[in-house]
Amino acid sequence: MTQINVRGLIIVGLTLFLATQASAHTGEGITGGFLSGFTHPILGWDHVVAMVAVGLWGAFLGYPAIWILPVVFPLVMAVGGAMGVLGIPVPSVEIGIALSGVVLGLLVAFAVKAPIWLAAVIVGAFAIFHGHAHGTELPEAANPFAYGIGFVIGTGMLHLAGIALGYLTKTAAGRIAVRAVGGLIALVGGAFLFGFA
Image: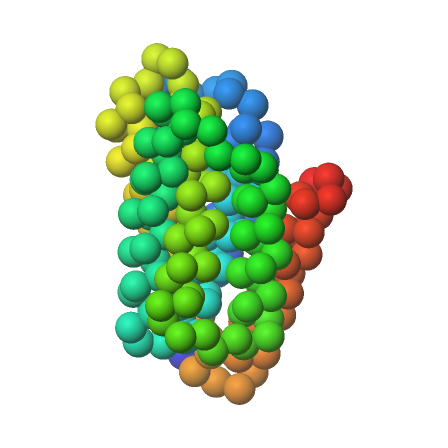
C-alpha cells in the first residue's frame, strides 16, 4: 500500500472518531439547509457505522457491488427522507437504524457473499430508516432541498470511507482487519439497539 493510501486511511479514520451521536439527534446546532443535512449523518455514530459498513461490504463483495450498494443506499435514503418530511410514519425507526449497524457489521465480519440483488435489497431496506430519521429531523428553518442534497453527500462520503477501508481486503491481514471492523460495527449497532450508547 502506498504512503498516500495509508495517510488517506488515517485521515478518514480520525475523521470518523470526531463524530458524536448527540449532535445528530438533538435538533440543536446548525439550523440551515445544506450544512445541516451534510453534518447529520456524519455526527451520529448510529448513522456512521451503518454507512461505513455499506462501503465496506460493497468493497468486500467487489465489482459491481462496490459502486451499486453506495448508490442504492442514498437513493433509497432520499425516499425515506421524503417520507419523513411528508410525515408518513415508519415504525421503529431507531430500532431499524440500530439493526442496520448490527446486520451490516455482521455481514462484513462473517464475509457474507450475498448475490448483488439481495445485498441491494438489504442495504435499501435499512436506508429507509436512516432517510426517515433525517427527514423527520429536518430543521424547520432549513431549505428541504438543500438539506436533502447535504445528507445524501454526507452519506456518500461515509460510504467512500468504507470503500477506502475495504481496499485493505487485497491482503490477508487486511481481510482480517476489515472483518474485525465489521465486528466492531456490529457491537456499536448492538449498543444502540440495547440502549447502551
